[in-house]
Length: 169
Image 1 (tube, one colour):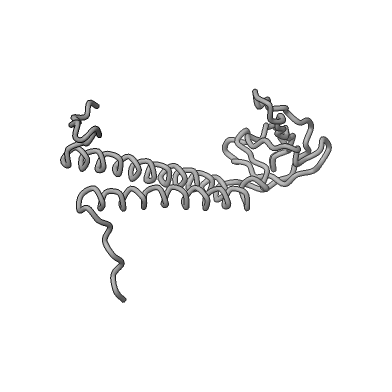
Image 2 (image 1 turned 90 degrees about the horizontal axis):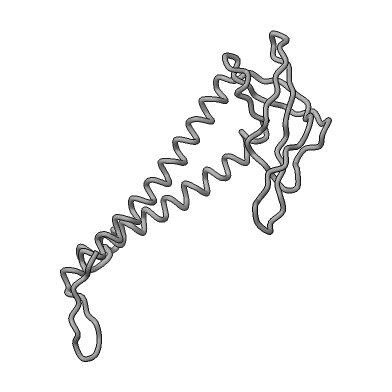
């Protein structure tokens, strides 16, 4: 985007109209990014809640730890590979998508899990569907909401030249 500028007393100045347009564009970028972030978190929350509501509980054994390379100087992380038996006595293995350093589980450790009875390959260790996800969701909602709020405040400032005062109670 090319901006018109005028040289005045040795300084560059944008016209007031261009400043307003730039402010509105910046505000809409913040607002859109914040709402997109909130939307992604809500979609993820709903997916996990749907999985948990339809899942059956079970237990399994960590049969190995899969190393996940970080590709840089930080330490590699590890995710458990779990073997479990469904209620109809079929044996399955799955790799937990979450990885951590240091490894949370040891090979041979028994873990509680949830699995989809209509697709037993879709399984999760229960510790990853509980507190950890909730904390990340709250952080995501907070960050996305704050970015969207800044977008609204920037939009008011760009359109009206000021931020509206809070309503008197």
